[in-house]
Length: 195
Image (cartoon, rainbow, N blue to C red; front, side, top):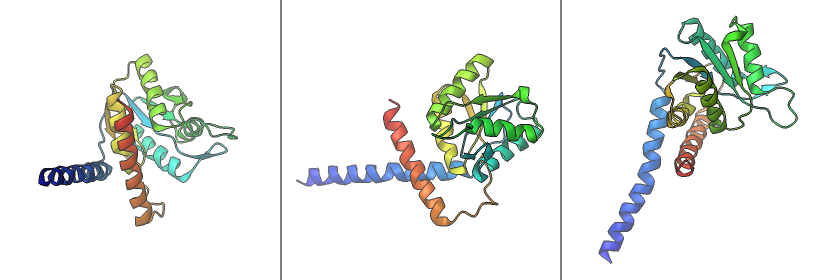
């Protein structure tokens, strides 16, 4: 009976420790801006409103513009499909916005079919293979950085993350805590389903 109790305690510790370790990894990566030269800057999609980027997408695109202006990559890839009833994809809204910021259109590529992070990154990998892209500088939410890096690396890309700043967006601690929990859950699901 004592052996069974010890085994159950060890199992409980492991079940609690793994999500805690993932939460630490997500939080740690969110605070790490890996500004690094790459073959392409990849902007993960977010909501758009009739062709106009949402504040979240705009923040990501502004970060990508900054990285472009630092000559860290020659190519930008914007991602994201569209929701039912939308006229424009997230990628299209991103492309238009980047052009308005002065990025030449021939340097911008669209992945406009993905409706999840993994779908978008799989399509990015196809674009990368076609264009000889090996390294990517990923732009998304700070707490999203660990998951997108892991997915990109699992797909065979050398990946770095440079998260968008949401300093201008009023995000409460409660919102950030919910996002952290969601990211840990999403990472656990990804780890289970990828195998």
